[in-house]
Length: 107
Ligand code: FES
Image 1 (spheres, rainbow, N blue to C red):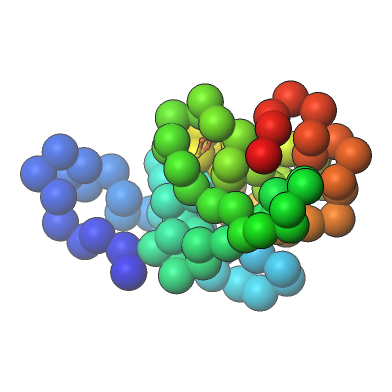
Image 2: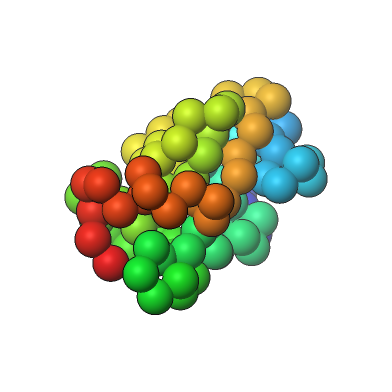
């Protein structure tokens, strides 16, 4: 669910774009972060933890924890909470890259 009216956001979220998560199209809005757009579309699982293979998603929402890593436009380990959406952006969960996933952040 996208927030339609917000006293701080005002009219910032007016221009819709299409993003793709696992090749499925979803509506997002310019200025939104990838993580916010996915959450608004009820997508909360962004990958799996390296050691325990448990679901990962938003945690700190400020670029500190690496829990929101996903593959965006072919680039692994993108912090989706710090990356703004772009029209046509292709996003995949960070499930199939266990080596890189563990380099900078632990489980
Ligand atoms: S949620 Fe912590 S870095 Fe994105």
